[in-house]
Image (cartoon, rainbow, N blue to C red; front, top):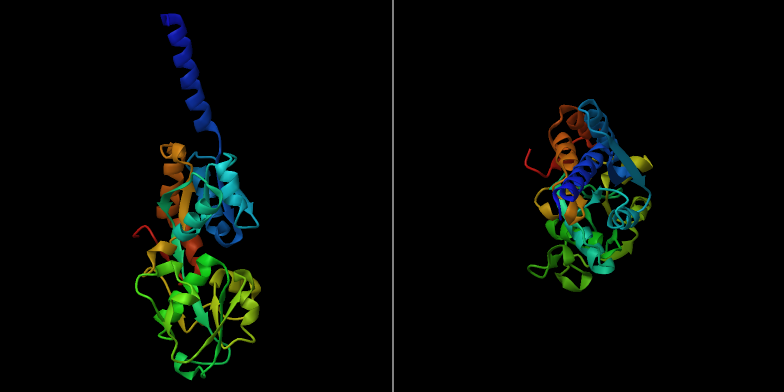
Length: 263
């Protein structure tokens, strides 16, 4: 390669880098996480970083769109969900940085404590492999069941080794659990969806999980090739450390979240 061609190639590569840096960072998310991200997008704009927020209505499109390269990063899932999606579809996606962990709780319209639950009580938990495991972990934390040691978030009903109250577990689609609140004795609930439904108090759970299960921290997820994108580093820093975003998180989630990155 002569010097002229080398110079042309170098200029071409340089202009490509500048062009990529000038493009808006495209961030995919879902409704439960959108409001604090909107605050981060506005703050980024003030700092000269253009960010485009793309909101999806399901939990499949954010990963398929990221894998296709149509967005740069998504923010809606924790590690168990990501690992399940990768195994199912073969995505080459990796966690980039930690966001918040949103508490999930056990709610009851009929009873004030776990001790009040009758023998044979009905308990509604999520029916998908990831969220049902989280529900079973919550029941174990409440002392209602005992799980085989070490099963973690992969727990299934087959892993229950003790059920002293003989509770009857009903598996329901996660987004429909709010509706089970009126009928079941106990329900696994997601505060974000409870607030959207406006049917009962999201803070009224008998028990919450939290940072004691760090695998449920929501992650910024990318294709591996994007790990050195300076736009990404700047946006995540804004999300984690901007007082404006902290205020939006507090307004959206109240006390029912913790920062997964350690403050």
